[in-house]
Amino acid sequence: MGALKEEYREHYTYEDYKKWEGDWELIDGTAYAMSPAPTRKHQGLAMQIAVEISNQAEECEDCEVLSEVDYKINEDTVLRPDVVLTCGETNEAYLTKAPEIVVEVISPATAKRDEQYKFGIYEEEKVKYYVLLYPDALVAKVYKNIEGKFDKQGDFAVERYRFEDSECPVTIDFEKVFRRYRNR
Image (cartoon, rainbow, N blue to C red; front, side, top):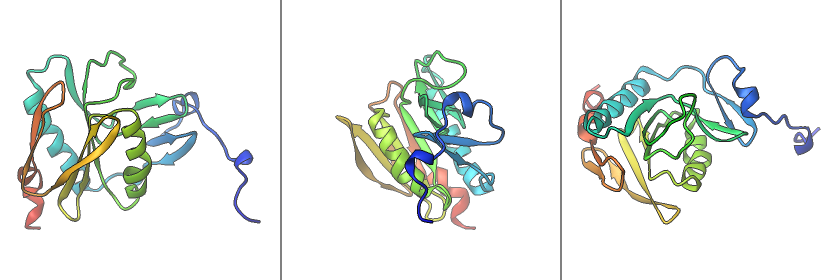
């Protein structure tokens, strides 16, 4: 019968999203399930990044490190990044402002969404830094938003990267982040 016509595609909004059970993301009105739960390695790396940033952000009173928080872009797009550094956010229910740093730990099930769709959304929303962390390769790709476009800063495996253009400048030591998983 062919592809489902666009006019018949279900379109969801934030009001629908709030009622759903489980873990979801909403991109341009299309629902994406976030199951199964992330692997231990995925969760461990996300936690290590969060701790690394959080330890340095203690002095930034207007900033906080969060994981698995809803970032509401508009009424039909809600993302749930693995880790964010956000500054000046006042809404308790979800993020409304572009985070300073967004980190996504890549899994086979989410790679295309993280590398393409979310990449474009974060770029357009002017997220200052986007980090794609690859658990199998133990490497991170860091992008910096320069004049509305992400510029790749490099691939990091054992190096440090300073997020200096953030309201709360922090450094991630990728050797430390990946250390536990190198010899497994």
